[in-house]
Image (cartoon, rainbow, N blue to C red; front, top):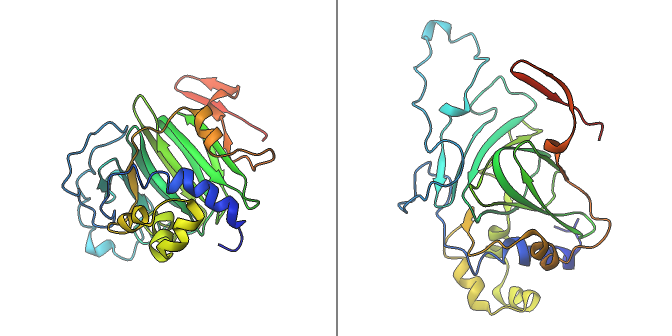
Length: 269
């Protein structure tokens, strides 16, 4: 955390991470691969459950490595507000240089602020979501993206993702390391759990009891009471000029080529 300006980090954390702590419903950990017992609203785009697991490989072909894998057959981790599944080297040994995460977020539900050891490319499959990030100079950015839009987050950059109306969002995230995983990241809730409540109270000017209560259950995806509109979110984030831009509205770029059943967009950015 020493890479980031302390005040800048705490400012964006108050908005994108701890701003959701007081409003968020407590979530179960995403590691069990099971629903946490709460009724699923089911408003996020994408599948509601994983497909049946594939048949066992022919033992006589064990020496031949698989070169095809399906996210539809990957274990799905679900909590109230969203789900995710992934393919990395552990599940698909042919992967050498990247891992992929497929995630769905319901309307108003937030993948809490987190930062990875890997760089991340994001792509919106369907729906809309809000990307909030903090660069190395402590400057925040807030952008809304829709189907076909992309983002690029450098390794170690704190960011969060919120599903937006009317349907939430389904997204793909590509990591530049085959050992990368959605379920092994640094997150704001883990940071809160490891920080003394009196220090959190001083920095955020918020009663200790809020942070003590937030430590009872781990966070991953949280349901917010109201994510607000983009202008309000940018105002609350105290946007300053010069923040590193991580979002590109690729859906608005010109078609490079189009033929029956296939379209191609090209950007030189």
